Image 1 (tube, rainbow, N blue to C red):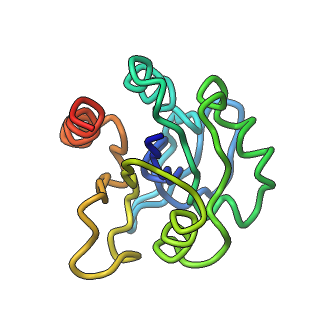
Image 2 (tube, rainbow, N blue to C red; image 1 turned 45 degrees about the vertical axis):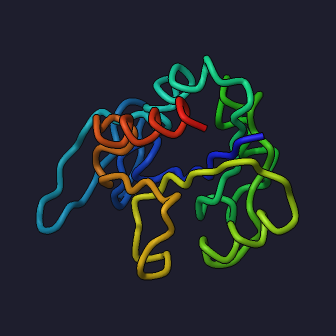
Amino acid sequence: MRVLFLDFDGCVHPAGLLERQSDDAVMRTLGAFEYTVPVDLFVWVPLLIEMLEPYPDVFIVVHSTWREVYAAAEIGDMLGDLGRRYLGVTPLGPKWSSITTWLSQNTATSWRILDDAPREYPDPPPLELIVCHPLAGLSAPEVQAQLNEWLETS
Protein backbone atom coordinates (compact mmCIF):
# COMPACT_ATOMS: atom_id res chain seq x y z
CA MET A 1 0.00 0.00 0.00
CA ARG A 2 1.31 3.43 -0.98
CA VAL A 3 0.18 6.53 0.89
CA LEU A 4 -0.07 10.14 -0.18
CA PHE A 5 -0.19 12.50 2.79
CA LEU A 6 -2.31 15.41 1.61
CA ASP A 7 -2.51 19.01 2.73
CA PHE A 8 -5.45 21.07 1.48
CA ASP A 9 -4.63 24.80 1.38
CA GLY A 10 -1.98 25.43 -1.25
CA CYS A 11 -2.22 21.88 -2.61
CA VAL A 12 -5.79 21.07 -3.70
CA HIS A 13 -6.80 24.74 -3.95
CA PRO A 14 -4.89 28.04 -3.70
CA ALA A 15 -3.83 29.11 -0.24
CA GLY A 16 -4.62 32.54 1.13
CA LEU A 17 -6.53 34.26 3.81
CA LEU A 18 -10.22 33.71 3.29
CA GLU A 19 -11.93 37.01 4.02
CA ARG A 20 -15.40 35.84 3.04
CA GLN A 21 -16.82 33.25 0.73
CA SER A 22 -19.81 33.74 -1.56
CA ASP A 23 -21.40 31.34 -4.02
CA ASP A 24 -18.80 31.86 -6.73
CA ALA A 25 -15.91 33.88 -5.37
CA VAL A 26 -13.51 34.06 -2.49
CA MET A 27 -12.07 37.32 -1.23
CA ARG A 28 -8.35 36.89 -0.77
CA THR A 29 -5.70 39.12 0.69
CA LEU A 30 -2.20 38.71 -0.62
CA GLY A 31 0.28 41.20 0.78
CA ALA A 32 -1.24 44.66 0.42
CA PHE A 33 -3.56 43.62 -2.39
CA GLU A 34 -7.13 42.48 -1.96
CA TYR A 35 -8.90 40.98 -4.92
CA THR A 36 -11.80 38.72 -5.76
CA VAL A 37 -11.06 35.53 -7.62
CA PRO A 38 -13.41 32.79 -8.70
CA VAL A 39 -12.01 29.92 -6.70
CA ASP A 40 -13.61 26.64 -5.84
CA LEU A 41 -12.31 24.89 -2.80
CA PHE A 42 -10.77 21.56 -3.83
CA VAL A 43 -10.47 22.83 -7.42
CA TRP A 44 -7.50 20.51 -8.17
CA VAL A 45 -8.99 17.33 -6.67
CA PRO A 46 -10.21 16.18 -10.13
CA LEU A 47 -6.62 16.47 -11.37
CA LEU A 48 -5.42 14.31 -8.47
CA ILE A 49 -8.17 11.76 -9.16
CA GLU A 50 -7.02 11.55 -12.78
CA MET A 51 -3.36 11.19 -11.81
CA LEU A 52 -4.09 8.41 -9.31
CA GLU A 53 -6.56 6.49 -11.50
CA PRO A 54 -4.02 3.97 -12.90
CA TYR A 55 -2.69 3.27 -9.39
CA PRO A 56 -5.29 1.53 -7.20
CA ASP A 57 -2.66 0.84 -4.52
CA VAL A 58 -2.34 4.55 -3.61
CA PHE A 59 -4.39 5.82 -0.68
CA ILE A 60 -4.87 9.25 0.92
CA VAL A 61 -4.20 10.33 4.49
CA VAL A 62 -4.96 13.97 5.26
CA HIS A 63 -2.51 15.94 7.38
CA SER A 64 -4.06 19.34 6.66
CA THR A 65 -4.85 21.64 9.56
CA TRP A 66 -8.47 21.14 8.50
CA ARG A 67 -8.28 17.94 10.60
CA GLU A 68 -8.24 20.23 13.65
CA VAL A 69 -11.64 21.69 12.73
CA TYR A 70 -13.50 18.93 10.89
CA ALA A 71 -14.22 15.34 11.83
CA ALA A 72 -12.42 12.65 9.83
CA ALA A 73 -15.71 11.58 8.20
CA GLU A 74 -16.46 15.16 7.11
CA ILE A 75 -13.02 15.43 5.53
CA GLY A 76 -13.64 12.20 3.64
CA ASP A 77 -16.90 13.63 2.31
CA MET A 78 -15.11 16.81 1.17
CA LEU A 79 -12.82 14.74 -1.05
CA GLY A 80 -15.66 13.65 -3.32
CA ASP A 81 -14.64 10.82 -5.64
CA LEU A 82 -11.19 10.80 -4.09
CA GLY A 83 -12.90 9.63 -0.90
CA ARG A 84 -12.75 5.98 -1.95
CA ARG A 85 -8.96 6.18 -1.42
CA TYR A 86 -9.26 8.02 1.89
CA LEU A 87 -7.84 6.21 4.93
CA GLY A 88 -8.34 9.02 7.44
CA VAL A 89 -6.30 11.77 9.05
CA THR A 90 -3.02 11.90 10.90
CA PRO A 91 -3.13 12.41 14.67
CA LEU A 92 -3.42 15.99 15.89
CA GLY A 93 -0.19 17.91 16.37
CA PRO A 94 2.53 19.34 14.14
CA LYS A 95 2.37 17.96 10.63
CA TRP A 96 5.73 16.14 10.52
CA SER A 97 5.31 14.43 13.89
CA SER A 98 1.72 13.51 13.06
CA ILE A 99 2.88 11.89 9.80
CA THR A 100 5.68 9.94 11.49
CA THR A 101 3.26 8.82 14.20
CA TRP A 102 0.79 7.61 11.56
CA LEU A 103 3.58 5.74 9.77
CA SER A 104 4.69 4.06 13.01
CA GLN A 105 1.15 2.75 13.55
CA ASN A 106 0.34 1.71 9.96
CA THR A 107 2.00 -0.06 7.07
CA ALA A 108 2.97 1.81 3.93
CA THR A 109 5.33 0.39 1.32
CA SER A 110 6.04 3.88 -0.03
CA TRP A 111 4.77 7.37 0.71
CA ARG A 112 4.88 11.01 -0.33
CA ILE A 113 3.78 14.26 1.30
CA LEU A 114 2.12 17.09 -0.61
CA ASP A 115 2.41 20.37 1.31
CA ASP A 116 2.97 24.04 0.62
CA ALA A 117 4.73 24.74 3.95
CA PRO A 118 8.26 23.26 3.96
CA ARG A 119 9.01 25.20 7.18
CA GLU A 120 6.86 22.64 9.03
CA TYR A 121 9.39 19.89 8.30
CA PRO A 122 12.95 19.22 9.49
CA ASP A 123 15.93 20.79 7.78
CA PRO A 124 16.91 19.14 5.53
CA PRO A 125 13.37 18.16 4.58
CA PRO A 126 12.41 14.52 4.11
CA LEU A 127 13.00 13.22 0.59
CA GLU A 128 9.31 12.24 0.44
CA LEU A 129 8.17 15.89 0.65
CA ILE A 130 6.80 17.41 -2.56
CA VAL A 131 6.54 21.15 -2.01
CA CYS A 132 3.70 22.98 -3.73
CA HIS A 133 3.62 26.69 -4.48
CA PRO A 134 0.76 28.03 -2.32
CA LEU A 135 -1.06 29.59 -5.26
CA ALA A 136 -0.43 26.84 -7.83
CA GLY A 137 -0.67 23.65 -5.78
CA LEU A 138 -1.24 20.51 -7.82
CA SER A 139 -1.74 22.56 -10.97
CA ALA A 140 2.03 23.23 -11.17
CA PRO A 141 3.82 21.06 -13.77
CA GLU A 142 6.82 20.48 -11.48
CA VAL A 143 4.56 19.13 -8.70
CA GLN A 144 2.79 16.86 -11.17
CA ALA A 145 6.15 15.63 -12.48
CA GLN A 146 7.41 14.74 -8.98
CA LEU A 147 4.15 12.99 -8.11
CA ASN A 148 4.13 11.10 -11.42
CA GLU A 149 7.74 9.99 -10.92
CA TRP A 150 6.76 8.43 -7.58
CA LEU A 151 3.59 6.88 -9.00
CA GLU A 152 5.40 5.32 -11.95
CA THR A 153 8.50 4.04 -10.15
CA SER A 154 7.25 2.77 -6.79
